[in-house]
Image (cartoon, rainbow, N blue to C red; front, side):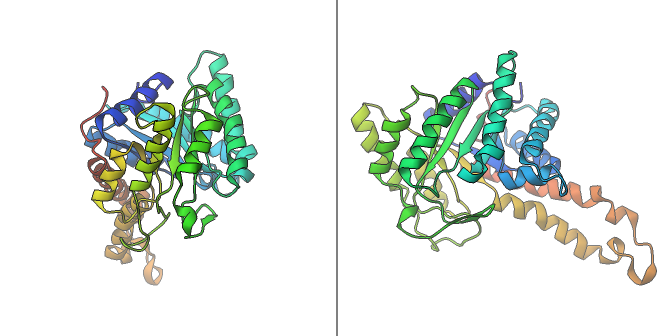
Length: 340
């Protein structure tokens, strides 16, 4: 059962929270990056989450097709076949879906899962992210209420974001300002509107200075204590310890102690994209520079097929990205925690 059932996915998240670790959620854009993620999880003996953004899904459908639902569906079906060969359990997730893409991405994928569930099958994806960070909180929560109910019927876990992650991802730009820090008031409003699981299970991406993309430590001040304040405020009102399953976005450049502190406050999932992109591409660049004459038809020559065969540099890219996934598992303390 390499692709988690809804019950197993819920167990995975519960185990992470109780055990003080988090799952790397690896963004993929191709069958090859998917294979690299699976390989990395297997080498780390860690279960994990594989996710695809709107732009990643569009890319997966082909540069001339550019259909997000087609690309995401193709990835999910391919993953079901190849993941069966790996001794770990993975969940499939769709990343950042803003308001203007709901009707072209998240809602149609939920419809597919509803059809599958009606036939006695598991949902296509195990979780979907609604990214309402670019709209006012009231509107964010109204849409979240609708989506969490639909997710519940599709046996899918929803992820939602309150606050803003800075930087840029797939055209969604977050300014670096005070909105990078979610407030206890935001969290209390979320619990009141969306519940704490009774209306449908969800994960919460609360922000504490996070920024998408590449940045050095110190560029933005991460304050993991914000997560504790949120959990404490909502927990005190509802009588629950760490009531939210939290998600850490924009973690590139974060110090290890910041990551571990965030996990201690209830982070169960951390998105990893920029670092694995680089780990995949760096060996390709190395191959091209080392085999310049072979990969190009220099001065009318034919080059060296063994060096321009995509498998030559593709194997190196997969190995490089897999190693970075292993590192992510180690950093998040999920290594050696696989269910089966």
